[in-house]
Each structure stands twice: as structure tokens, then as C-alpha cells.
Length: 294
Image 1: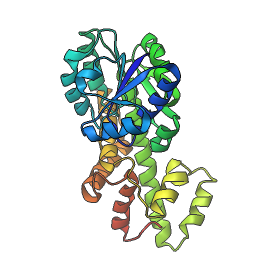
Image 2 (image 1 turned 90 degrees about the horizontal axis):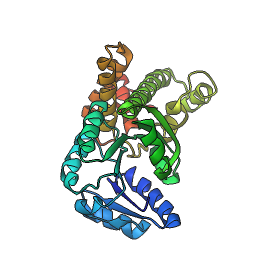
Image 3 (image 1 turned 90 degrees about the vertical axis):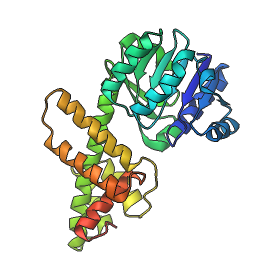
């Protein structure tokens, strides 16, 4: 790969593109970057040695990565970029998108001789910065293997199935995040109202069967400290839990717990704010119980 492009330089995309740039520096390649706000692309170029580019220029790339808020955002960019794409290129979408959109996007790009893989990531901003993200890849096995070496931001890349499977796994993963976070918040709010010291309670929970990433990291680091650092927005979590329910509906499954937590995520996004960190959904539990979790 001589030329890669990265579109979307948000909290995750910025460090992911930087990881590509570090790899390119070792291999003699180059990385083009684009963002809706051009000044962000220029700042990225100045800091990381990438090249700020227009969308027509991005069409020169052999591999195009996108990391945007929604599949609708990807469609918008795809429509503008489509006339400039080179046949034989690969579009790798790291957005937490919708499986149905992935299948439509792949069909659309194949008409122009461009391949499409859905490749959402997990591991947070810290994983993006260290190049240790887990990537969930959906698409034909041979195409996944061909692009694997270009995933400079990945610590682990797993082929989970055909087109759309990556987005489906990501949505269910984030729905489970929401379930664990909400359930832990409910339990801790009750313990706080009972006079239990929550740090001690978490010490016990995290050495026992009730532990999760929420109890080990999110709640101690973000909720008890009242920091709520804005990394992954509550509105995006609500979007992902909604996609997970679409996955359930598409197979005529039954997931009452996921459905309930998805509704609570939507309520929290509306009442607490969609741009608040996803850990701030526990503020809604605090309001319901008249008790801070701290």
C-alpha cells in the first residue's frame, strides 16, 4: 500500500490516522486525511506527517478508511467521492454503522470496481492512540486477508462474517456495554442509599462474579470521580443499541433486556445530553434515585 486515506478525524479517527502515518513512514507510503472541518485535517498533517486532502484527491488512495458518526454520514461522503474512486481500491469503514447500510454500500461501490469492508473498532481512545484496537471485519474472507496488513491501528483484527457482520457484532457489543453499565449503576445507587462505601463495594464486585469493564474501569475512573470525560458520546451509544435491536428484529429474535436498556439509553441521551460521555447515563439513575454514585 503506497497511498491510504483516512476520512473523519474525531476522537477515534485522529489517532487511528496517526497510526497509519507511523506505518507509512516506515514503508515509504503516504496517508491523506480529510475532515469536514478542513482546519482539523491541516492540524493533523502538521502534527503527524499526514497530508490534508480534498475529497477528489482522496480518490487516489488504494485503501480508504472512514470513521464517521453514522452510516448516513458515510453515504453522504461516498456520494461526493464516488466519481473520483479508482477501480481496485478498498473502502474500509470503521464507523459503528448499520449492517443493512454495509450491504447497500458494498453493492454500490462494486459497480465502480471498489471493494467495501465493514470494520468497526473497539478499545476506546486509549486503544486508538496505542494502536491496540480490536477490529471486527465483515466481508469476503479473501478481501479481509488482503487488507489485514494495512490495519496499523489494530492490536487484533477478527473476521466475524460476511458484509454487515462487523457492524452487527459492534452494535451487540455496545448494547452489552450499555447493559453492564446501567445494571451496575442501579446496584451501586442502591448500595449508596444504604450507606455502603462504593469504593469498597467495587473492590468486592471486581474480585467477584459481578465484575465488568463498567465496574473495573468506567465507574471508578469516570463516575465516582465525577470526571465524565467526553470520549464516546451518549447519543452514539443510544444509536448503537438501536442498531442492536434492528439485528434482533431482522432474525425475529427476542431480546427484552436489550430493548429495555436501549430505551433507557435514548432517554438518557435526551435528558442528560447526547454529547455527554456514555458513562454519564448513570446521571439518569442518580436522578431516579435521588442519590449520586460517588
